[in-house]
Image (cartoon, rainbow, N blue to C red; front, side, top):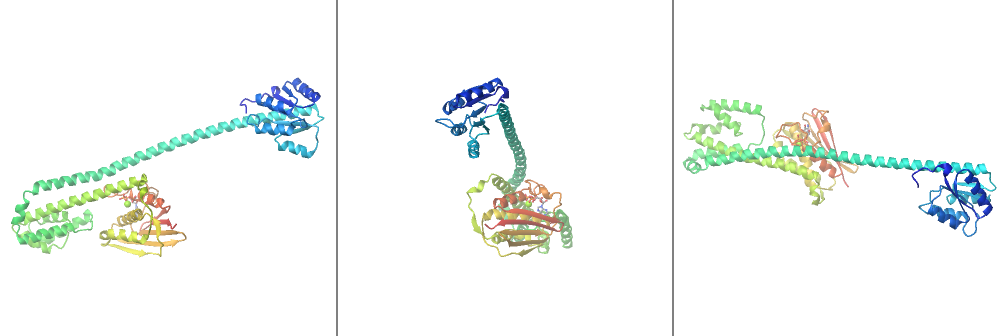
Length: 474
Ligand SMILES: Nc1ncnc2c1ncn2[C@@H]1O[C@H](COP(=O)(O)OP(=O)(O)OP(=O)(O)O)[C@@H](O)[C@H]1O
Ligand SMILES: [Mg+2]
């Protein structure tokens, strides 16, 4: 359709009638009113005239030889060029069914002959106006569509820049999170290298000169120092040091305070009666100090192990962002088995002061990524232990509810303040000290749960925090 509005008084009208007098009459009236009129005597000429130069409106007789008005109208409507041109039938036929047919083939109006000139003019004017209104509506629609399109692309740009900002944040977080363990690894390796430089040359002589008795103490120190699992706070450690100092003094050991300090450093906190005779031996100092060096060596190794595990966690989070593990296949698994595995892995942290209460329901196996779900249980359990300072009750409840498995992990720790609950699932959000928490745990949890088309919810008041994972069984 033309984009310019037709000027109604100069509109271009195609008049089609096989009766020459009618044609002349109509053409005369309309020309007089200022319209541009093209009179044609039959359907065929009407169609080719309309194709060559589409009129603004067509006045069409019905009864014509060869091709009647209905067919002409039908053909006009079938052509892309002429389909929107309003067609007014003008005919002596006055049967309702004929009028209905005129509208059915696409006519917009029907004027019965003989006609009143005013009526014809009024109807033409009306249809030209409707037509021009339609055109302007279409143009407005077009404008609106363009505006919507522009909005959409602006929105996409906004989302894109939002994503870039989020990515930047993520990268900054990752850089920090990888840098911290790298720093720990670096300094631990320095310690190990120094140990090597300082001790290697002395070692053969040390072991040769070591009496059987001293050897026993040496090994006992190493064993105790490397088999201490519980983590204590510095306040608890200060208490141990005081107790050790007085125990040593009671055993009349000289330098009691200094020795107690080193023992705490080695994570030997109590039961030192059996060690007391060591400090009376002539070579106690070299035995004790060498044991301390070995223990420090072992400590550096553990630090490296932990730091490596930590950077592994960051990489795992990254991979889950990039959906890296898509090669992996889902398998049927029993969720209780996974939880039990995790509890076994945490046995050392659990056995001193955590009571685990299990309320396991009867669960069907589900098709899932069991290794990834183990990450979920690990993070939830580990958070619970940290929240309880490794002392309290961890309740694990599982049940089947309609087509979902619910797994609830409840701890009686300090709880989560309501104002931070909306943030805990964000990557790198943590309330823990640097080195203790990276803030990725719950982000990983949520991603894995969503990958299983499940949901996770949290409810918390001081003394009772529950994370509920819901997984569909199908
Ligand atoms: N059971 C819980 N009780 C109290 N607070 C919790 C609990 N679980 C999570 N939180 C809070 O949510 C925060 C985010 O937890 P998230 O597991 O994502 O990170 P994180 O434990 O701090 O570090 P990471 O898991 O990477 O070692 C925690 O720092 C803590 O403040
Ligand atoms: Mg955590």
